[in-house]
Length: 211
Image (cartoon, rainbow, N blue to C red):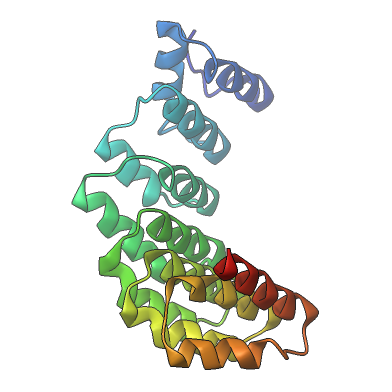
């Protein structure tokens, strides 16, 4: 089972999809040979298959995280969020992705850093939460700060209660990992928010705290 760039893309797509669930050596060879394929779609599918088969080295991850194609970078960040990461170089590359020009890459980087509780990213996540132009990025950064729970993120999470409704709702959830009179006061104010989903999030948090 060999990769052939002259083959119809749909045929290669199907072969890579099957290979992701095939334990044979041929399937794994096909996956590895497409990690640097010319077609971004094939690189994405190869990444997914390689994760299923635990085939990726640190160099493979670094290549994918720094790929020229947006879709490959997004996919790599989504996948690495659930992987065990011990190589500092990988965390550095994920951290760098917080400055990516594509908002969905930034979103994916924030999510991955939050999932890995990467404390060294707190200050940069605060910057994203407070000043990024895209609300999706601010929301993802607030969620990551809440997951990490480092007190340096407190002001950014509290400040997010003045942002757009989705960001405010995310901030309520994030505040569950912070304590103090400033948090209590902010939640009291948020309980009267004009957005019903924000108010519902406050009520849900209050019920969880009572349990």
